[in-house]
Amino acid sequence: MSPKELAAHYNAKVFDTKEAAEAAGFVLTETHSPRGEMWGTDGLDSVLARCSNDPQAIVDSILAAVDDFADGQPPEDDRTLVVAKVL
Image (cartoon, rainbow, N blue to C red; front, side, top):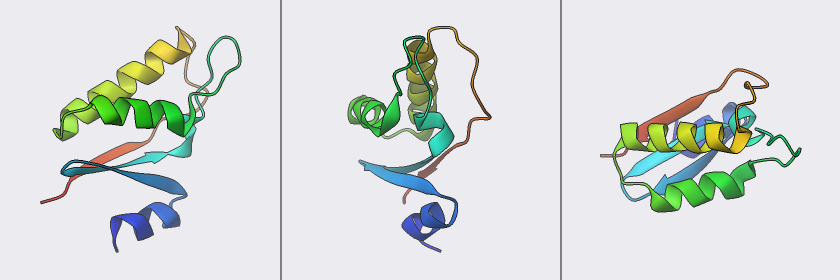
C-alpha cells in the first residue's frame, strides 16, 4: 500500500518533506490552544517547512510545536504520529 493509500485508509494526511514522508492522525492537527484556536494542517505545514529530513527530528519538532501551541493543556485524545524515511 502506498503512503497516500495508507493515509486514506486511516483517515490521515501525508506530507512530503525532502526525503521523509510523514503521516499525522487528524487528532494531532486538531489540537486546540487555550483560546480555542485549532493548530490545523497550517501549523503542521509550518513545522515541516523548517524540519530537516531526519525522521526523529521531524517527530521531535512536531510534538514540541503542538505542545507549545497547546500551552500546557493536556491532549484532548491520544496522539498518533508516524514518520517514515523514504529511501
